[in-house]
Image 1: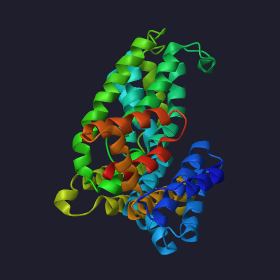
Image 2: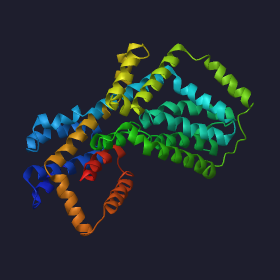
Image 3: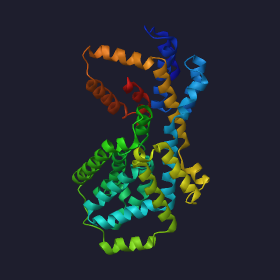
Image 4: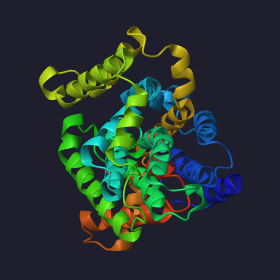
Length: 372
């Protein structure tokens, strides 16, 4: 279907557009169908996009692969390696139980801990990774409240805890530009400084986390009263983990050091991409992880997808295809269309299409158009 759609686009005359631009739009349609249908893995489609560009006369291969040299790729790699280290060290589990011990053992505050522990963690590592890391921990906490067989879906409390971790990871991802892949896509085009993103993104993330916590408690009123045995049960669970290990201390120290460098890039002059690699390198040097851990824990397929998506976005911009599409869109909307109207249109398109396709793939398609 994607190939047929590409041929149809190439057969339709597009006035005012050069051949490379015409072919770039055809390639965009091909990519949209491939990414939305996931007929092939997202990364495979990105590889196809690379060799099709020189074959179709859109860009030379040297220009097509320039997306893989984008600094944001290395910010992404560094972020993934940080996540691998946090996961391997056990720091995430200790942090979740620590937060639970501080906020209380009531159902409401346990949901708060699930939402905020995942949310705060996902601000610094990719949100899907944060959720995957915290889900097994949430599953060990739910039975402490006397919930039996929560996987049957009969417990409102279990639902709120798991959804809290899921929604918390999404909301927390707004906090920084490394929190989620679409943020990285936007950062690659806008070159917004790391700290500047946080000024807007972190307060928004905190607000969304609070709203998520309250809504889940309202929609799924817990049927339990609290941890069976109260704080003593929680203390015993924490005691089983033992004292904080040397590896956990090193992991936490490097993470806080990396965060410090990220928020002070304007002072130190060290860019956020270098900071991510500094943090990653420190985890290797200190022995928290080794290269085998990185090979197994880093989503290299997502990185390949990202490079291909950036390549397609650059092709749309360089050939004038993106400008041609936006100009036609503005013409259809009227001569006095405002920037806000275009932004709202793109937001509506985003909300609708993310119901049927990956938000990462959609970001790869829409972000280049928002720059014009």
